[in-house]
Length: 207
Length: 207
DNA sequence: GAGCAATCTTGTCAGTGTCAAGTTGAGTGC
DNA sequence: GCACTCAACTTGACACTGACAAGATTGCTC
Image (cartoon, rainbow over all chains, first blue to last red; front, side, top):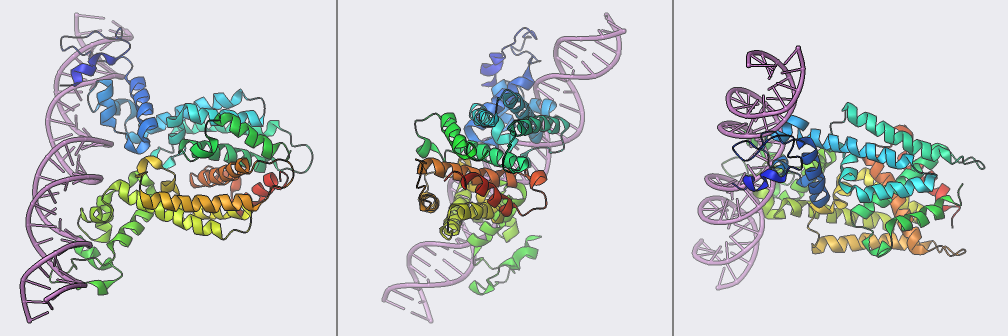
């Protein structure tokens, strides 16, 4: 039984006592443990390669334990996506202007690749989930705010169009980055700096 | 046995005779049949939901038949990605200028959503595959050509940077479109026309 | 300290990908 | 006309997965 080897991987031993079997019946913070294990696995192999049973093994619990916290594979991924939108919203809210928001968007994708991938894979999610939709709305608001902050004073630049443009640019750059399609052209440079140049080139002259 | 119901779905009945069992032992064009069935399934449920056994059922063959043509799940997806890059390359080659190339990129993603999704999901592919890498190189050349066709005469606009920008914009727009994140803002309008406006707004003033 | 509800386990089922070994039949050379 | 060969396909098996049901354990509350 290799499971006994993993038994004490729980960080919070105080939550439950060990019991005679060596493994505490209650994990203490299984939900979080499963989440972080899932994020690791997704970052390594993508959402498709994810196995609930493997996550359970990593956390040192039985194969059906994750179901109690997430119900479902889709439930787990939905929770991850919701968390991701929350993180993205706070990241964007701290941006001074649109360019900075774009840089933060790219930074978020690099720092939370697993979240990012799942957030934009709707066929893996429970789309009707309340937590998910509210978190997404929050992020959406933060993005919209960043767009309208730049007044686009002169020349009738449509704010809505500019928003789509900015989002597309940042999202495309982040996606291509994560799928290793910009490894050659970006090379050794800091991707966020490259994006800053990019955004400056396109938006500085269009405002 | 429902399989007998699907037996004659092969378009080329001439390739083999029926035999006494009702189903011809040789399908005739199984490789293509599996591919198109896979494209349908992916467009509907994403690459994650794909089941080789289900594809076999749809084609009216045994569960292990696909393996003979594609070896693997990864093999099938790799073949799809390679085909996709080939299609994209020819689509881009016909573009007059950079804006047109972008529009065609978006058009490709809308017309071949399954191909597009698989092409940019490296963790699902056999990355070393020869056919894939050559097809990708072809598409990459076509893209590069479209970028350098616009000379960017004045002001030291880096061609490489402009290339990344154009690709990011088109890729991001296409990705967000397919993941239904632009359903609201784009609405009833033709997405390709929206993109054309977008690209015009950003690149017309930057060249 | 009794009972309750949350947490986790054990057992099971259908479905899947992949491998190995056998079967069919189309084409080729003679 | 005929044996041979080899690609195309089938059958069978194995380990693994997600999901469900029913039971065991334990922290909490009153």
